[in-house]
Image (cartoon, rainbow, N blue to C red):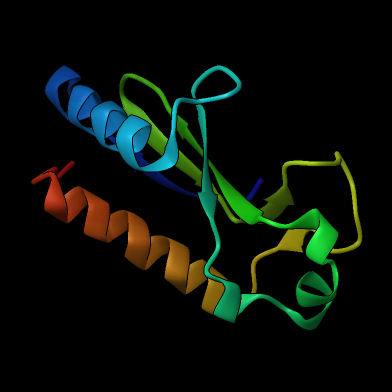
Length: 110
């Protein structure tokens, strides 16, 4: 799986991230997986056509020592659909920039 991974989190970093993600993305629905909704202006044509599949999301997995962000654009309603797939370069850049901004906001330098 292609991903953006931040290693070397300490317990304090983990707590800050968990609190932030719980507040801004909602409690994880499955284990330690959070869903970060992709900005609608970045959707591909097929993702835009699949309004019933919205929202299109990135899965963020928060563990005690790392945050893993998949580059796969997923949907919450089905396991598979043609509108799912690896992020475009623009979507990937948006994810990295968004996660980096969260880390900066929380003063996490891992």
